[in-house]
Length: 385
Image 1: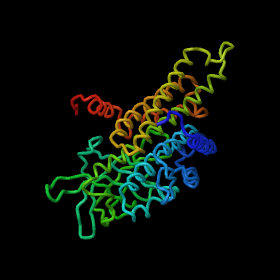
Image 2: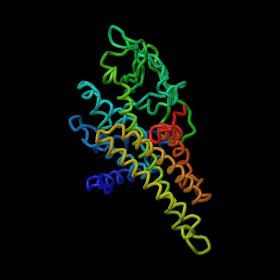
Image 3: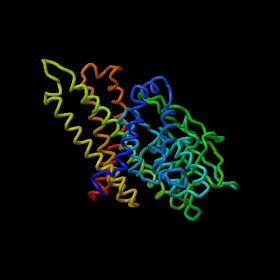
Image 4: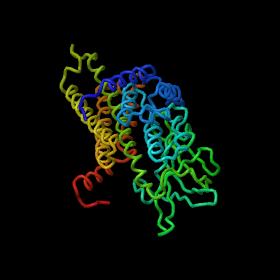
């Protein structure tokens, strides 16, 4: 792994950044505040090949990896347009299907995920399971035609724009009777599937939903991959999720830091720019350092994942997500503080970033669960939960 990005990736950053600036934070914020969607940007990014940069070329993708996709999301976020569904649709769903799907599943779903004309949501969290994926109760039972899926999911992003949702359920082992994880593609309009919006105190164009599955009838081919290896397949999708969540947080942090830096360079009090004072300069410098460190860990995680090291990528992806979430919170808070009263205005568009940044500490995995993972798996400490 080189610590210097290739010319190709530097060019990718440049052109994606230009696309993001074409739309910008004001446009993104307007969509969020008026109940609009980011469809226009999403489809243009797909048409230009950015959304599917990690997917196989034979299905319309760019043939790259998570390192490339994370660049796309980070640069869009830095331009003020963090596309949350990139964490889900091409990343989790696209990766799982491209690695474990049948040829028919790949032909059916990957081209649309690559060009943006198809969005797929991901449903794992349940009201009574939370971070404990072993307690998932959404269950699939075999039928003559395939499967019947019943259960409930919460905090599912983008069901209003998705054509299908990749659902984490459980099937019964015929030998032991125990339940084991399995992944199913469920069309959003399948009979028995219903979703309701969860009202959130977030200014975001991406809405959150509860998903209800009541005896949803699915064909045999709805199962993704092997029924007996779904836990491995699940974590193969969660590592990209953490990498992309890091990119999402880093984009927000960069955008907030950029606004704060520009402001303190120009704002003058007592004949000097306020950025000349260490009380503002040092916190911003610290955030810059922490941002670069978080990106290095994200790049390590992506490099390990793209090299096929799922176990090594798991540790790095968790650490990257932790570091990126922390710096996103610090960057947005310091941006508000640096702008003073202007930091709370709609005109400057900083305060609205605070809640989005704060959410990166919670989702898709909380900082506490990451610390549990590092304590147990990296340090060898006794399991605490």
